[in-house]
Image (cartoon, rainbow, N blue to C red; front, side):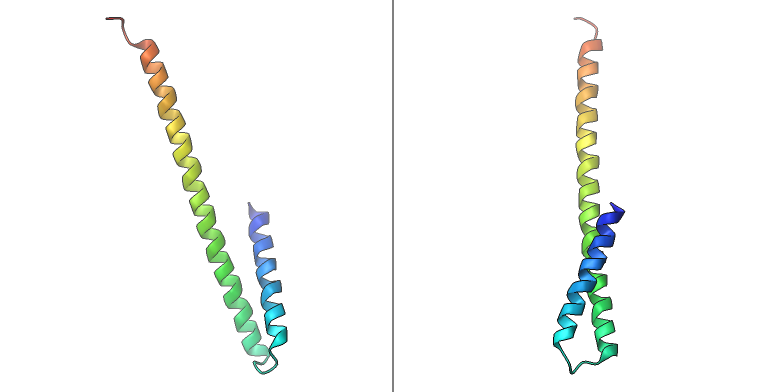
Length: 80
């Protein structure tokens, strides 16, 4: 999981460097700002994806738990 985040940062940094290398009029300071903004956007996007995946896993496990509990309840119900 952390490896994915690290690679996302590296990829965003490389992309921002490639874009800023084509622009000669911005200056080094602006290039650094652009790289920082790109990295921030990549971190936010990664965080959102991780949050979505975590919610998905939790909901699936809750459904499976409910299903198992229903099975046990059916088996342990007194005969009528």
